[in-house]
Image (cartoon, rainbow over all chains, first blue to last red; front, top):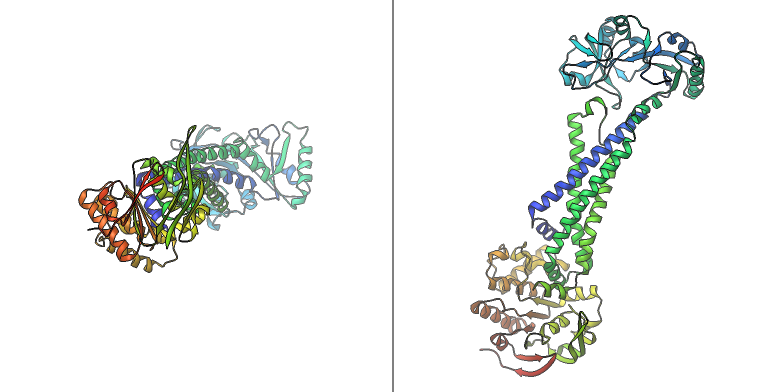
Length: 380
Length: 231
């Protein structure tokens, strides 16, 4: 603190430059935290899933359906306690710009299988009792201003036409990685309006023991191997992770962009620090004449770099944390539970420290090694 | 008793392929409490000698001893610490830090001591009082005249109560009136406060303030004169 006045005076020498450098670092760390949070959110989503739930899809691909008749045969497999199914609907509301997931489910079995979706008992009963009823995530209330009891009409993309549903209930996820802006309605309603095709998008099975998951998955797949619609069965986690991998190697991409941004800002910050130290060559020589040691000058220049980078980092990381939390950001439903994690904070702090070292070490070393007489002679 | 002893000092600089010999076996002594003016033409080695005494530069050979400490044998860190305690240095161009007030500039050497904030405050006010600028504490260098700036620089040089005050052309940038004020101040520091003062100057009036004048030419003392107290 003894040298705080000197540090503050030096930082305030070019207020605009100091502000812009701090702002650059803040922006870099904000972007770093944001990109990193995309990775961690996708990772958390891909790791979500009960070990006692298996997902059965068409072996050809998830876009290909499975016969509804499979439900009874799946339920009869030893170890399977409950079966439910769902179908992607892909409807759009209004101008369709705001995406949200909407799919048809076998309502009763689905809600029993997903206790993570918390629905008030009266709303649950109302939903189950209304064939054209819909259950929506709590976020959709804010997004569209919907209310329970209201009719909403979706425009079908996979299943053409206007589809009107009555909102009967609102679910709140118990885990933040569960999408809270999805809409579910009755599979029976979809099946009826599409001419009773009897096709499900995927099945979910609840089994009695997580240890038996591989054996049960094999039994199921063997059972349908020679049918017209062979199956691919895996854990719910693997199923969720497959969506993450549909994004390609997002993690590598995001980390690469994040580090590129940080590196670009490193050059900006290092340049600012170099300019600042070079402009003060005479002053540094004067300080040495007064009795400031090489080590102390090194420390002072590093401290300036530290104040700039760490202030910028605190602002950038703090802004990311507060902004995403305050806006409840979830990338239009693609990234539920989007939140800067403590690990990202720590990593951002480490990046800021590295930034401080990388940007400060050259001007600090130069200040420490400055030959006093030559420095004074050159500027006198 | 000599405060500064210079023994057989040689100093050579290399500039490109050329070797420039400034001193070749220079020896001299400066008494404690004296006021000495180093004079001579440009390139005679005045400032180099001042830098050697201050430990800002090292001799190629020979020894420089100040107050019993062999300055020429100290490490860079030891020199810095020694300078902070024993030497006050004043430049021709004042060299105040423009982002600091007069008070903060004068306080700089004290930041390197163990003095408390209160003790530092007392010393800074005394130093600025000695140079007659206790009403300019919060002024920045740009708000001061050249003479005032140099007086702040002198206050900075004496605030840590060093034995030795070295001045390199302290009146070189000042008008006649300001020069006289600064020179009077130096005489006062020498006579009233017992500071040993070595001043490098081209100015005969400044040199006349000194009690001893040394004339350097091509690295050798060609003339010495001892005067009485200035008028």
